[in-house]
Image: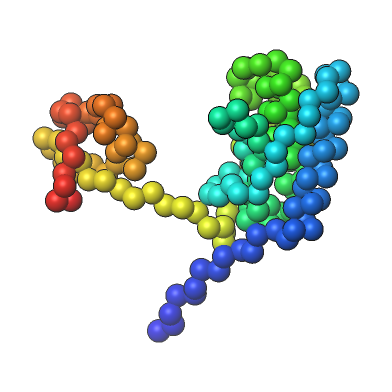
Length: 178
């Protein structure tokens, strides 16, 4: 009997590849500024995104940032330069130019088409070897069964959100004993 193969983790992109991503981001930003006749500055670019997403545009605490996932990029570097970079730059430019809109709404789709990229909301790529953080599960009970809530939902319960069982309708109660 053979032992199961160890799960290998893909290596993140190199500093040189990160520089190429930064350059592509600058190029799409320049192109978008010309298309929208605006002068949006280059946002912060980070390579600290983890999990399943290849990229993320975020405004948090006044800091505007495009975050890229270096492990997901490593799986198909050229593909992500073509698809993820314009996707996130389009989010940034739509936010700067139009304000709050639907995340993958009309303005975003039009800009993606102008970039020559497919206006898809999510990527279609395998994540084999990408380190994915798993949330701990918290046990709750109702009148008929045991429920496992994610840490996110558990924290919401702690903050006052109430969840009910879909089968019996009772309120879910935290079970410290598991």
